[in-house]
Length: 295
Image (cartoon, rainbow, N blue to C red; front, side, top):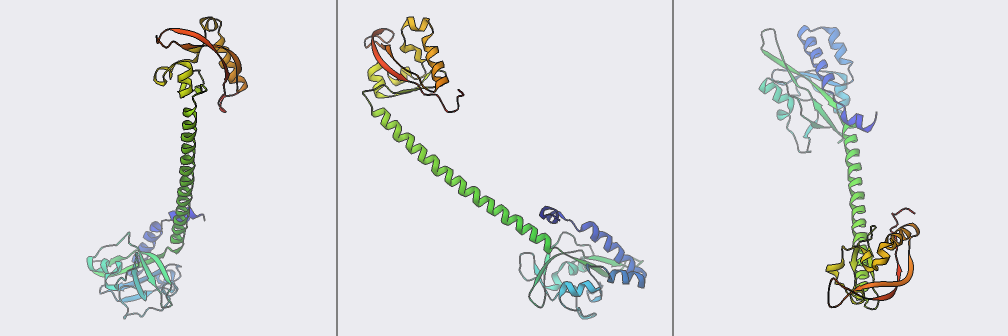
């Protein structure tokens, strides 16, 4: 059985059927039914209305690690009881005692049985009151379902989740550190580029629009960053070059080959008029394509 299957196992349907069988057995006092219950692999016992144990099957001995004393033990067959959080649970406050005291079946509870040798068994009890034909409470029957394997499966899942969370946390920390190093590297590179005043260094996006602008570009080209960023790089070409599609061919070549190198005349902004073009200047251009751009 897989870990998930064990964790999802619900003994309630089996418990309900067994409780009905027990009720029938002790209502009829049928020896055959008692033998059948005694052969069950799950711990089953019966008390009278006061809580004294008057019957238990063989599985109770294995479950509790002791032989219950008929007529002397009350409410539960276990040597010692603990709540699900490990705190002591007095026998007179156990689910069986509640079922008898309040004359109702108790469902959904969990507890831990401690054996005389110190081993502990987590279990689910199914205490159900028994009544005579007149409806008077005459006792109760209880079945204790060992959920050790389910608890192991839950613990395995918990440890797995904890391990995954630790790995995710470590990976996130590594990625955060890598991102911070990259950010610092980009910052240093930006400071380096911006400090260059003898060369125009700027970046274009894949469609040829200016994405950033350094001090050298501002000095050589004549444009301030806030007025050129977002403009198409064809603004640096003469009207004749733009008319013949030179900027488009340059961009296409850069996309295809990963770079474009040339030396020619390019237009700079006039110092006296932001809309006027002045003398041309020779330049060398290298355009690099993104690694994500296919050749």
